[in-house]
Image 1 (spheres, rainbow, N blue to C red):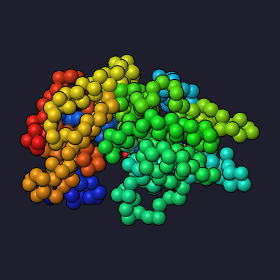
Image 2: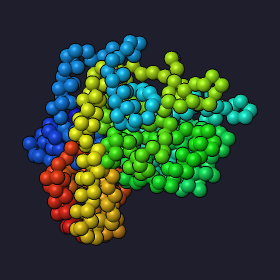
Image 3: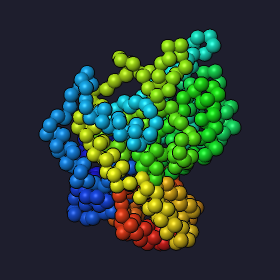
Image 4: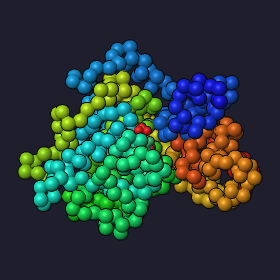
Length: 424
Ligand SMILES: *Cc1c(COP(=O)(O)O)cnc(C)c1O
């Protein structure tokens, strides 16, 4: 690694593992020396069907040979088809979609939608409302607006001044959320299950209060489902794994990660509801011609890839499969009763294994490593041929393919048990 082209020519903004994947198939990858790994990282929740799923490969090959890209000045048939799947089959709530290239860009869309809403529905004195409330521990991306929306100091460090118009409340503190709403507030943005900070779900109470505040104060309820959406948590809509059914009606939702099987694709959806102005404008039409755009976003190739991915998730009921497997994995892991494992939080194939940090901190090898506990344990698992993702300092995350079968899950559990037993 030290003398590689990566270290010589690529910026050092990632603390990369000395690991060189070369090819992948399903839940497995092989490194440059031919060593086989079970990949329960899946990018970071990016590969819902595992690596190189034949139907995705076929869709990409066929579309690449037919039409890769045309501009958004023309009608891209595949955008309409993919949007229909998202609206009708994933959500079942009328609305419209925009296609971007990434999660951060999808969230930028939510933020711009909220700003436009605040102009359309201004304060009593006619000046726009602009403030968006987000939660501690959140992660919304690395662009300027989404970095600012991300209520984590370690993400902001060195980049101030940040974008104005964001206010942070402690995650799941309903009283603080109520207290944070003022005449400038225009939206509440949250992840139904926070991924990067450690697989932490929103409480049903907090989500309900957020929806109530939306109704009482004419706000937008924005959900970042970039990581937890599209079946990952065991429901096609991530928030429905917290509050089932149609009790909570979000105003807009962002997606990325799983949506493109690794091909760059993101999207956000806005609900077909009135914004409450005199003209009767619909929220899903608020970003009118000329107000938002992208050069690459929603190309025929990106959307064909997204459709192939979603088709398999829907046809094979992978959300329900993920739900059952998540419950099975949590039950097995808890049955080990290992002191090094303090908690397991499973939402389908979004699973957080929380480590007992004091126990790890007492380990001599750990002390010598100079690493944070989650990254150190992830490396031990990698050495044992299981790929996982650290989440915050104390959580190991499984973001396995949603079509992972029980035999593969058991194999991963076996490796976890062996490695964690040595630490207990
Ligand atoms: C990964 C992630 C993002 C950012 O997505 P990018 O594609 O990296 O821009 C935003 N929100 C959540 C919840 C994420 O997990």
